[in-house]
Image 1 (cartoon, rainbow, N blue to C red):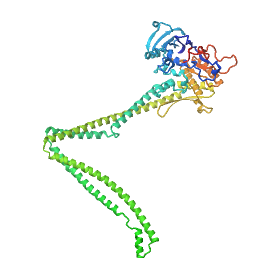
Image 2 (cartoon, helix red, strand yellow; image 1 turned 180 degrees about the vertical axis):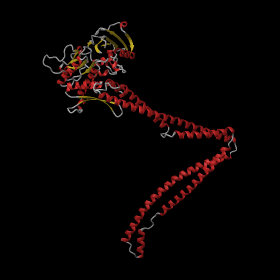
Image 3 (tube, rainbow, N blue to C red; image 1 turned 45 degrees about the horizontal axis):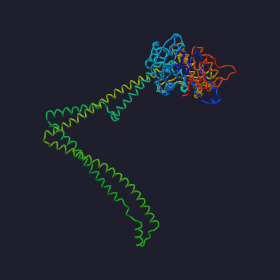
Image 4 (cartoon, rainbow, N blue to C red; image 1 turned 180 degrees about the horizontal axis):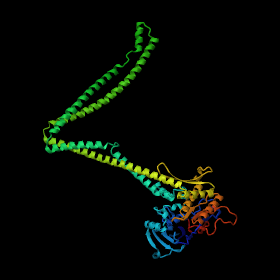
Length: 596
């Protein structure tokens, strides 16, 4: 499929563009001296690619100039393409009604259907989504299936923004799962495996997320299902017994249980706590006494005065020894007091806890004794009914917990299964990549050779197209220029060389699909910019060689980017220049109208 014609219903403003089978050049000439040093000239050189994309039913982008500026609402554009069978298809799309499309097939190309009556179109006023499906079937790019025609269109309508990366186009700014499976398919790998791998990874991640949510609902701790089942069994048995006694209005068993609990649990625990409280209080009293006694009562000054009255000399060595002894004892005393105060603080904390528990047990003992001494059967019935309500609430909570735990078990089983399937897909991808790399006649190997051939013809350097799975099983794509030793260099990082890598990649893919139902055109904007003259000549030779193979190439450039030639020696033949723009007013622009 090649481009044949692009025109509008306002030919006085936008002249029809007729494409040729080989090399097509959109040439912008800078004739005014004051414009020679400008970076942009607003002539429309780079606009044609976006107009072609519009004709191929690109989505409605409010930032696109056709929709942004109201003066274009009156335009209707027509894109004519030559199909595989030699017939011609015209796609009609207006700006004001951009979501209503018309189609017409013809046996003769480069016609003007801008005034064709509605009844003479094969399909008229087709809704946008339906129109894309219809165009997909009419173009019949089978080699792209199961993806639609627009998925790979960006590789063959390269704008300046699409030269930033060889593989990831501007329209592929989404997750890798959106474009890597398609690119793998384009290069001859099993794209379906890559799609399944991403889908399985997403499914696995979702299961893990749900598992974490359930764990959070369980409070972050996972209890064994067996334990929950056992607790449920005991609670249910207790409930059944209480309900049976309630139905029989019999509280004797309950009285026995309460008496046994009072004697075996409450009273015994109260006795233990009282003993512990006595011990703690006794220890605290001893600590208080020790803190009072740990005081140094000897005063050297008073001793000196007493010795003086007795006529004994106290100054000198004796006083120094006493001072040192007092300092030593004071240090020991302070350290001991610190430990005693820490111990007292710990005793106070434990005493507080013991007193609180004794208070609670005393309350429970009082309530139990009151219940046992209560002769009102109605009050006992109410009390036991409340206990059954509590039991039912506990059972409901346990059943909910059991449900979460069972769901957690199912999820973990699913996670193990998905992880195994994910790993199996990763292994299949690795095997597929290895097989395609190893086989010299595979599609990928052929693209590799064509890609290197183009770079070598232009730069006299080898280039390597590399595809490999990373540690997660995701495919990575690399395009690198090699040095003399076969090592990757940083040359491909510059914008000029990266643009050249993009062109080489697109042409290599087109060439390997020459025998398939596949696009046979490539549009590259500003392809010669920043290259030296020799490389420009070599690249043009490559483009013409590929045109001879049946590939239609459309390039745009400014005349200052043309390689220098001898006087009168033109770079392009007149038939190759399909659009000639210049900066001498509106007649030289793509749209012969004031700038917007």
